[in-house]
Length: 170
Image 1 (cartoon, rainbow, N blue to C red):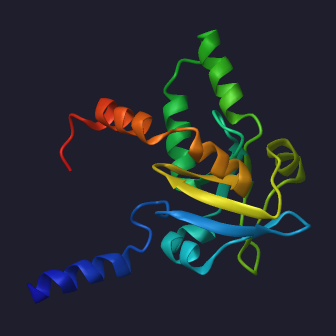
Image 2: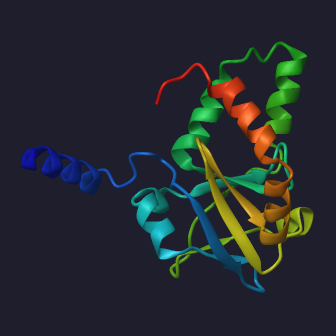
C-alpha cells in the first residue's frame, strides 16, 4: 500500500499538468491595463503548460472568454482540419470558430494580458472568475458568472445529469 501511494505521488509530481487544465473555480483580479492576476494554485495546477502560452477567444455560447492551453487549442484545430474545406458550411464554421482567437502568454509577473476589445465585448470588470471545464477554461465577469449559475435550478440540473450522464458509472 505504501508503494502505491508513492507511485501516485511521483506520477503527479512528474506530471503536474496531466489534465491539461486546472480543476475548479478561481477568483482573480483584472487591473486597469487589462492584466489578469493568476492565483498561485491555478499556476501550480497548470505547471509547465504556463510556459507554452494560451489561446483566448470570445465565448461561443456565453458572454465569457474561452481560455485554452496550447495543447487543447491544437486538438480543436486538428478536429477542424479534419473537415473538408470544399464544403462551404465547414469553412463557415472554421472561420467563425477561429474569429477573435489570439495567442497570449503570461508576463514575468504571471499575469495574462486580455485584449481591451475582448474586455469591452464581454463586459469584464475588476472582479473576474476563471472556471474550468473539460478541455478549456472560461473567464467571466464575476457578476455575470453568478447570474449564469443561477439560471439552472436544482431540478433542471438533476434532470440534465440523469439525461446526459445517467448511463455512466463513476
